Each structure stands twice: as structure tokens, then as C-alpha cells.
Length: 299
Image 1 (cartoon, one colour):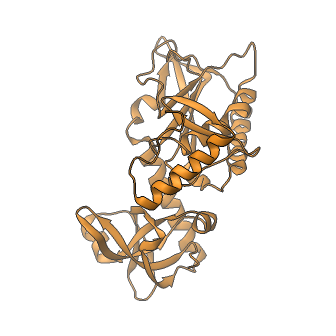
Image 2 (spheres, helix red, strand yellow; image 1 turned 135 degrees about the vertical axis):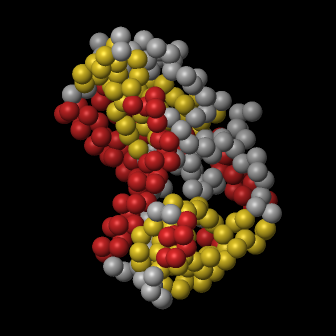
């Protein structure tokens, strides 16, 4: 079945306690590379406009088979392709597509940042970060006397992003550049040109990952720093957000075909026969429905 971004389907949406799920109209929002190579797709619920107005929900007006149809942008799901039952329409208006993507990106970014909104705005230099390094958090210190910040990120980004995407718990990951292994916030000086250069580097490194990832789900943020309560101009730490993999059975590789997996708070390089073992284990677990999807081949 050929699934394309902007298609509208009737789909069986999972409901707790109901194996078959509830049939609803959905709009496919994931890009066509994801739709082709992944077992899962990202969808937005489609409903009558009256429903959104009554519940004060963020939505975008669309017209498919009937008037006053809307896309409930903050009602989104990641579902297996086999839950798509039948195609019933498509959004063809480019203006509506742009509005939906803008609202979608706003929702995704807000969800990523909501939990840590307050301390992400400012950090105090020399203070201790409230999280430890684990399967969801990685710290990298800038040592400007040894290596420029951009050069450090150029070396590390791909393998750590792939490590989190392949992680044993299939959860989000956050990489903080400018925090020591002990969790001490140091940051570094980055002027506007430096920041623009690093943003472009981030985008370029995402393009190298195979299979293709939906870059709109990844974020980079430059977090301002304070010293003795006052903002230090152009001093930042950098936060990279890596979303959970849309399909836990898929393995992501760097451009030089290296495989990294996040195990026990470490980014491990998997080589030789271990790669085959990981592939076999994940495919087998997918077939038999084993929830313990990410058992390390080294355990």
C-alpha cells in the first residue's frame, strides 16, 4: 500500500483495553521517506469543526469530503501502517498544508520543551544540572583550548543521535554540549555567526543518517547562561532533542555505516557479528511481539 503525506484515511486508533481500536479519520503528516521505509506513520485526527470549537482545540480548517472539516493538530498519533483501513481523501491545497505543518511543528516543539520550560531559558554557570547522564541524557564539555565547539559537535552529533534513535528504551534523548561529565554547567562563547553555523551543521548531520529521519521532529536550542544572576552575553549551552524512533525494529546508521546504540547511559559502537545479532533479535522480537525489544547483545 502506497501511503503519502497529506492522504486521509479511516484508521483503527489504539484505545487502552480495546485491541482493534476505534475507527477515526486521520491525516498522514509524516514525510514520504518515513511513509515508505518505516512500519509506522504519524497521523493527525480529522473531525467536524464543531468538535474543536466545543473543546477549544488547536485546529486547521480543511475541506475534504464535506465542509467544516478540521485537522486536530494537537491530537496526533504514531500508528502502525496496518491500522490504516482505507484512503478517503487528500489535502491538496498548498496553503492549508503550510498551515498544518506550522501548527504541527509548534505542537511538537512545545511538547519537547514543556517539562523543562523554566530552567531551559537560563542556566547559572557553575551550577549542577538536575539530571544525571543516563539513557536519556548525555553531556559533552566544550574544551575550547583543545577544540572549537563546532568541531566537537561535528565529531559527535551523528553517532550520538543514532545512539539515541537505536536506544534500548526507545525514549527521547537529549544531548547537552557545554556540561561536564559531572553535570557542571560551563557553556561557551558563541556569537550569532557561530550559532548560525552550528544550526546548519545540525541540519546537515541529520541528512546523513540512514534510513532517512523526519528532521522536523529534532530540535536544537541555545540556552542562555547567567553568572551571579546576570546574563553573560553570547554564552550558551546547546541542547539537542532526539525523538523516539517511530519504528523500534529499524536500526539507524551514520553516513560511514557505523552502528551506535545507547546502553546503560553509554553510546556503544556495535561491530561485526554483533550487528547481525541485533538485527536478528529485533526482527524476531517484532514478529513475536516481545516487549523487551532492546535487550543488549552484550548482556
